[in-house]
Figure 1 (tube, rainbow, N blue to C red):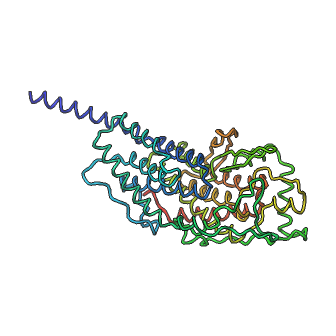
Figure 2: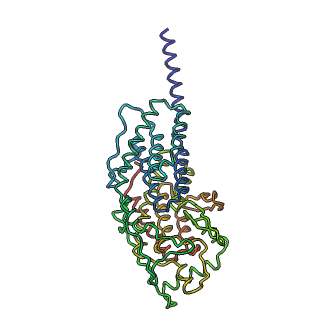
Figure 3: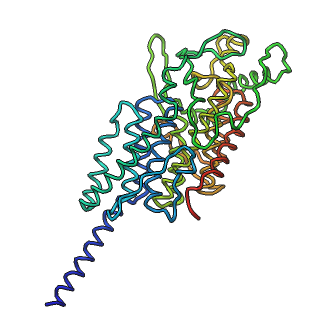
Amino acid sequence: MNRFLILLAGVALIFSSCKKADYQKVTHDPELYRTTVKKLNDIVLENNFPPVIASRNYVYANIAAYQVIAAGDPKHFRSLSGQIKHLPVSPAPPKDAEVDFQFASMLAFCTVGNAVTFPEGSMEIYIDSLKQKAKDAGMPSGVFDNTVAYADTVAKYILKWSKKDNYAQTRSASKYTVKRIDGRWIPTPPMYAQALEPHWGEIRPMVLDSAAQIPAPQPPAYNMTDKNSVFYKNVMQVKGMVDSLTTEQKHMADFWDDNAFKLNVIGHASFGTKKFSPGGHWMNIAGVGSAMKKADFGTTVAAYTETSIALFDAFISCWDIKYKANSVRPETVITKLVNPDWRPYIQTPPFPEYISGHAVISAAAAEVLTQAFGDNIAYTDSSESEFGIDPRKFTSFRAAAQEAAMSRVYGGIHYKIACTEGNKLGQKIGDLVNKKLQLKIK
C-alpha cells in the first residue's frame, strides 16, 4: 500500500511539473514580450503620439518590466535602482510566494503603458488577453494571483517615480514664439503646426546628468548671400538631391520617414495618415535583434529597456539643442529665395531643423543594440511593410543608423551637417548609456 501511495505521489509530482512546464512555455516565450511591446507601439501610433512623448511611453513601460525581471533573477540581471541615480529601490517580491516573473514583467509593462498613454485604458483588452492566455496554459491560481499582485506593485512604483520627471509641468509651459527673422524656424506647410514640445529639453533624463551634458557644434550661421558659405552650400545640396532623387534614395526616405501624423492635401480635401514614430521604429528593430539572436526572455527585456533609455535621453538632448538653435528648415529658405514651388520629398515636421532627431536617436539606439547583440549583425527590417513600404536589408545596426540620418537629407527636411553631427551626438549618448548601465551580470 505504501509503495502504491509513493508511486501515486511520484506520478502526481511528474504531472504537476509537466503542467508547470507547459504554462511556462507560454509565459516565458520572448516572442510574447516582443508582441507586447508591439501592442504598445500600435496604441502609440493609433493615438498619434509625437515622437518625444512616444519615447516616454516606451521607457517607463520597459523599465517596469525590467525591474521585475531583475528582482526575479538577481544572479543574472542587475536592478536599475542605483544605476539610474533618481530611481528608488524596487519593491522586493513577496517571500514564500511563487511568482512567475516573466509573466509579471509583461503585466507591469502593460499596466504602465496603460497609464502613460491616452485614452487611459487603451491596453485593458490586451491585458485581459494575457491573463487568459496564462490561465488557459494552466498557470495555478495561487501563482497567478501572486504574479498579478507583484506586477501591480512594481507598476505603481514606476508610475509614482515617473510623475517627477517634469512632464506635467511642461504641459502648461509657454509656447514657442514665432519670429520672422532670417535663419529662425517658422511653421511649414501644409499644416503650419505649432512648434512641437519646445520644453522637452527640461524633461528629467535617465542617464545623462542634464540635457546639455554632451554638446554639439553650433549650426552654420545663416548666410544666403555668400554662395561659398557653409549654410548656402548645405541649402543648395538639399535642393539638388531632392531634385534628382534615385529610386533607391526615395525608398530610403520613405522607409525612415516615420511621420507619426502626415497631413495629405489633395485639392480642397485633406486627410491624415499615420506611421510609427522614429522611436517606435527602433523598438521594432530591437525586436528583430532579439529574434535573430534567439535571446531568452530576460535578455530580450533588457535589450528593449536599454534601447528605450537611449532613445529617451537622445530625444531630450536633441530637443534641447533644437530649441536653442531654432534653425530654419530647408523648405522655408528654398521656397522664399530659390524656388517658390519647391517642396521636400517627405513632409517637414513641426520643429526646428538643427540637430536631426532621427540621426541622434538612431545612432544612440544602434550603439546600445550593437552592445546587446553584436556588431555586423546583418538583418532585414520589415517594420514598414504594414504601411506598404518594402523591407530594407542592413549589414549592422550602425549602418542602419547612418542610413536613417542620410535619409533626412534625401527627404529634403534636413541639411547634411545636421545629420552627420546628429549621428556623432547619438553615438556619444549610446556609448554613455552602455558605460553607465550594466543590466546583465556577466
